[in-house]
Length: 367
Image (cartoon, rainbow, N blue to C red; front, side, top):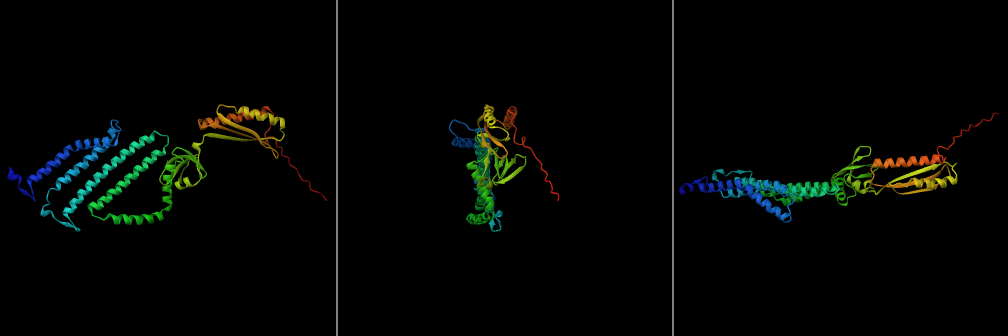
């Protein structure tokens, strides 16, 4: 038996082949148990002791990729003990067979490791998104999505550079230098896009508005439906869908209607010049009494102008934001009807109603 184990086959003993095969088989069968144990240890490191925080979701995300990474790692270490037979030595474009096999192993390890890191990013984004859902500010959710995608792209870039360095033995310092030069050229060519990108960061950090807010910008009023990296999408009050560059959302004057504390109503009541002083002195307090409504927080009524074509009474009142738009319009209608009824009761005409149009005909002189 000992002689059989020491027999040479393709440059390696049978015993060495068996040891490598048994190691790989054991790794295949126990990789899930080992990965589950390691994942639990990692979870305990990143969370408070005795306070499970989505442990099931963490294990479901991490166990699979961690098991694959460990299996590939053990397989590569085990196969590395075998000597490559002389018959299998060949060269392809200045790379021998050993280098090619090492490159394949390194690539597999890097891909497995990056996949594992992506699962960590996904878990972190899931936790942050859950916390963001507890707040009314929807911009937090978009910020989580943005950084999740950003770190994914960053990991893909790191993975590609590791493959170039470890598999193809490429000097990535030259690549970084070349990318910086290309990046500078692209920055000049895409100046406007970069300005919009920077503006998106300002929006996410400063939060002048959030998704769901009603804003007025560039002469348009509408509901913010999405804040992107380059532009903001707004559903206007006419139900059109417009795209506004983020730079304009930051640089121009923006009115966030959703953040106002009160709704304002202003009425310019043009009373006919036929109305006397006593009538005006009587009607102004009466209008103030009409505005004594629980839904109206404060109000102003005064004679703001006179002469010319009419006496102008300015009526201004404010309501709270607890009303929806239908209730607000119903209140305005009720106040308007009450003012009209008051004018009719006191026989006061509006300026337009008391204006007489006189047509004069010029007579021609007959010689």
